[in-house]
Amino acid sequence: MSTHPDRRRSLRIIAGAALIALPTLTLRAQTAARRLTPAQTEGPFYPVQLPADSDADLLANGAQRYGKGQPAWVEGTLVDAQGRPLQGATIEIWQCDQDGHYHHPGDGGKADPAFQGFGRVAVDGQGRWRFRTLRPVAYSGRAPHIHAKIKAGTRELLTTQLYAEGDPGNARDFLWRRLAADERAAITAPYVATADGLTARYALVVAA
Image (cartoon, rainbow, N blue to C red):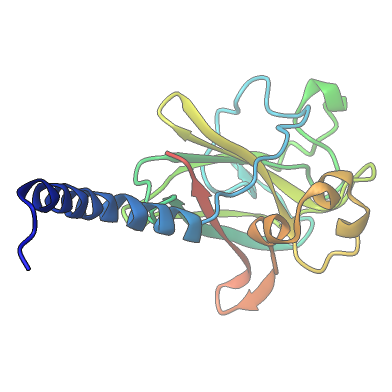
């Protein structure tokens, strides 16, 4: 049985539209597979003035070395929703010292001057980033955490906080408790002993 010309033309149009839609459907599936890292508040202690020493080693502030607390590597990856490394993006972190003080006038200027307190690194071609710092500590009702801000040039892509898995303060922390279970998992990692020392790894995903 022959098919009417108009019907054949309609079938070709429908088939062509389906083929065009396939990449879109695949892209949506890939995006759904990589859940974006949840945002959290910047908090009141982002540096008013960035320190002269703003490298990846927060345990050294100029010629001074910080000797308190548990030294740790905080590292991970940064990709977009399709899993592409965001080479050249910048990650900033800031946190309190072992005694719970930030380098900020709002915290009374009590932070140990040997603790850099703030650092910045560029993401490499494989999306990797790494800091040398302290395992975070609790203060004023907050669970141990490290603040993180991700930028692409002058554009801010994400501000969030990074938590220590298994810390008893997490369940009492008002910000951590607000997150769904999968959101908590995205920004909570164990600090484990490795050949390179205590290490926590976070896989960050942002909408670029």
